[in-house]
Length: 211
Image (tube, rainbow, N blue to C red; front, side, top):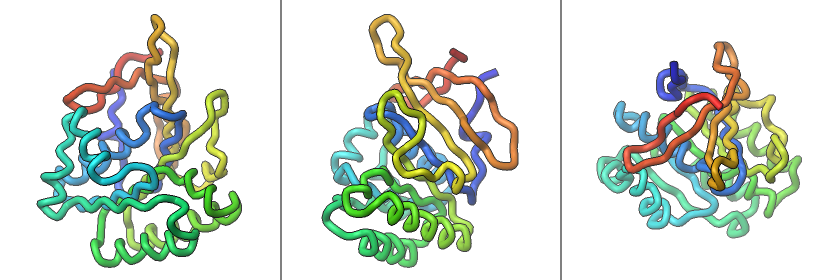
């Protein structure tokens, strides 16, 4: 039986999605937002890499119509370059948008970019404050984090702080880089221990067979 992220995902928890560059971290985070918005929940997407038009255009290839949810008032995309603000200013911007938009789901994509404006200790301290703040408001939090090829964990050590940890990677198959997904950790519930192919199409993301 294929696992289902949508069925197993619990609201009001903190989830880390880590992986190498281009493996689909942003797409998976957006799919969480889509699942929430289809239930009339609000999603705040805070991106440190892509502009709103670029993110909207890229997600159309997966069948995700972000513009329609923005028009409905269910999605707000905040774009900010890492070096445009300091650590505290990024935190204030996030808090202000949380208070004004009152989302059910908040995504920070990717947290590892904050290393450009702060030390690992400072970034980790910021993330702890964010988690505490949002858990008090019963919000669902999704962090994405870049890892270097050949390593398992992001440069900011935060696996102990999150409820769920999902790792994406690629497996060389017939000269193609085939993405796969592994659930490393889920706090308070059981999960599949092996890895599964992750397929992308104009109908979204699909979890395939075990590898």
